[in-house]
Structure formats: C-alpha cells, structure tokens
Image (cartoon, rainbow, N blue to C red):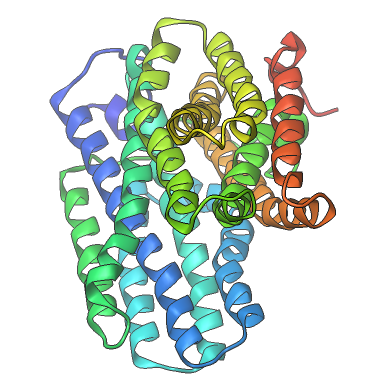
Length: 397
C-alpha cells in the first residue's frame, strides 16, 4: 500500500488494482445501504398506517431521518480529521444493524422517532465518508465516469427496496431481518477497501453553512435537485390523475423519470471527463429547463411523455453528478469532506421545501402549479449556471 493510497491523494492518474478494489467496495457498500434505506421508509409508514396512526405523524417520522442527516453534516468533517475512513464506515454499518434490531424489537412510537433520527446521523457519516473518499482516489481523467457509475448504481438501489418490500410484506419480522442481512452484506466489501485519511487535515477555511458563500453554484445545485426530486416524487402522480391519466399511467410517469435519472448518469459523467465540466453542467441545466416546459404539454401522448420525462429527469439528476465532479476539482481533504457535508445540508433543505412549495402551487393553480414551479426553479438555476463568476471558489471575507 503506497502512502498516496493511504492518504487519499489523486495525483496519480493511473488505475491500480487496489484503487479499483477500493472504489468497487465503496460503491457496493453504499448501494446495498441504499436498498436498506428505500426498504425501511415505506415499511415503517405502512406499519403505522396499519395501526391507524395519522398521516401527519407518519410524515413527521419520515422527516426525522433527514433532520438527522442535516444535523450530522455539521460534525462529520471534524470526525474525519481524527478517525480513519474504513473504520468509520465499518462502525456505521454496525450501528445501522443495531438500529434496525432496535426497530424490530420495540413498538414504541417515541423510540422509533429517536431511532430514525440516529439513523440519519449514521447515514450522513456513511455518505460523506464514502463520497469524499471516492472523489479523492478516483483517477482524475476518469472521475466523471466513476461518479456517474456511483450515482447510477445508487439510484437503481433505491428502486430495489420497495420491490423487496413487495415480496416480504409488512405483517411479520421478515423485512427487518432482510434489512439486517443487507447491512451485514454492505459491510463485507469493506474488507477489500484500502485505508483512508483525507489528503489534508488542516482546519477548513469554511463551514457547512458558509459553503453557500464559498461555492454558491454548488450549494444551489444541491438544493434545486432535491427540490425537484421530492416535489415530483410526491406530487407528479397526483398531477397525472388530475390531468386525466389513469392511475397506472400516472405512476409510470415516476418510473420512466427515475429510470432516466439512473441510466443517464454514466454518459453524463463520461461527457464531464472529455469536455469542460462547466459546459456539461450548462447542458444539464438547459435540458432541465426545457424539459420542465415540455412535459406538461405532451401529457396527451404517452410515448412522448415517457421520453420527455426520461430525458428531463436524467439531465436534472446530472446536475448533481457534475456538481460532485466540480467539487472534486475545487476542494481536497477535509475541505472536500466539508463540501460533501454541505451537500447533505442543502440537499436536505431542498427536500424539505420542495413538497411544501409544490403542494401549495398546485392548490393555487390546480394542477399546473407544479409544472410552473419546476420551470421557475430550473430556469433560475440555468441562469446561474451561465454566469462565469460562479465557477470559482469565493474567499470568505
């Protein structure tokens, strides 16, 4: 093991066997964890619905984990300065197993809120450590493809949790046991990973909140992608029903959109390797804006609607993929870890605001308010992405 690999630097642009094993291990670990996340979110909601718990309480429980993510984001960079990365990931896997076991063995609603909050804290450690590590060790000429592959795999894993739940059901302990087994499997690839410490551990020149001033383009990108994801996921089927689609067609709107969000990340990452990442980001923002304009106009033609949503969702998701690539170009070490933690916070803000604003917009202009909000959000980010002034790190004064 070279000193370069142990401290995470990426000055070497060549692929090595250990580097490939480590990247494969990290992608595998977090993708299996993604299946677990997408399994337990609907599982707990369905269990509470069966108990007659109000939808307000169910929604509040679903928001508890993102709150944990946002709060945990403030401390992860400091933790990474003192603790080795692989040990952090292994500890996170063990804690997740313990939390799933706790969910399985108690029916206390208060306890579930606490456990889900702690799960959010653990989750942000897993995501920030993994993403920082991958960005630092990925060979620079191929960083875009690595991050595209990672985002594709992660997106597909999020689709597998609900599919697994459809087979396990919610009436017994089977899904909980499945979750424990999945987390154990997520820990296995870490045996093949190298050890990791950030390439620099000096005190970062900015914090999670001040990241908005240092790199406003990246912070806003995280916000708008999360805004779109949560608003459309929760409200697009409702939109489809209200414009006259049947239930199956309204649901397929999400399916084809999510499929594009997964499958287009690798080619977008490849493009960012071969062309200027700024140009690729502008193209993603442009398609996100044009798609928001077009998809409400092609609802009458299902084929055109599916194609439009596939491209729109895919390129909108590409905004986040390219944003991660740019972060790797601008930051390293603990500052990169701080940037990735900030991604979690601004993504959390967008995820919280998106459904609220989207729902309000549909109440004010039923049902076209959702489409209008998407046009405004995508158009605003497109204008921001066109300004060269945002493509540099801004010092804090």
